[in-house]
Image (cartoon, rainbow, N blue to C red; front, side, top):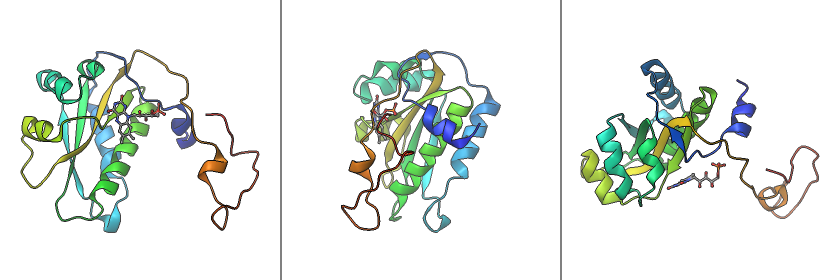
Length: 175
Ligand SMILES: Cc1cc2nc3c(=O)[nH]c(=O)nc-3n(C[C@H](O)[C@H](O)[C@H](O)COP(=O)(O)O)c2cc1C
């Protein structure tokens, strides 16, 4: 799949039909994570790959009762690395790689940032000096939402100097 098609087609999926993700597919997603760029190539992140449905169920109350997490096949919990300035940036890029690779493989994903950090660290046995920074629910989609809105190019882009605009037929206002 063309990268731009994956970027355009991906959505946050909040309704999954439970089905196991084949090991090969899951491992390819982890490879997409591993190949992500990072500051100084330090790859300042770790990932807890949760396939145990009991643990996934236990995540629901910790993640502000977001019930759809229960139907996800796999939950990825991205962990910061202490003393690394770019750890949040590195792990954010890594998760984005996974979302696009997942879309290419027919999987849906949803970033999960709403959770009780102490509780998730405790549930997953994360050492004191590290912390879960973001989660990603993964599974087979049971919904195909329309594109969500985005800010206009005028709100987002400045050309050469702050405040300078440019008209473009390619940069669109629709999602
Ligand atoms: C850092 C971050 C945290 C997020 N946390 C949640 C969350 O806890 N629950 C949820 O349903 N969606 C969450 N989202 C998904 C966003 O709501 C979603 O990406 C946004 O509304 C745009 O929709 P789209 O992904 O379908 O384009 C999060 C996204 C990001 C990047």
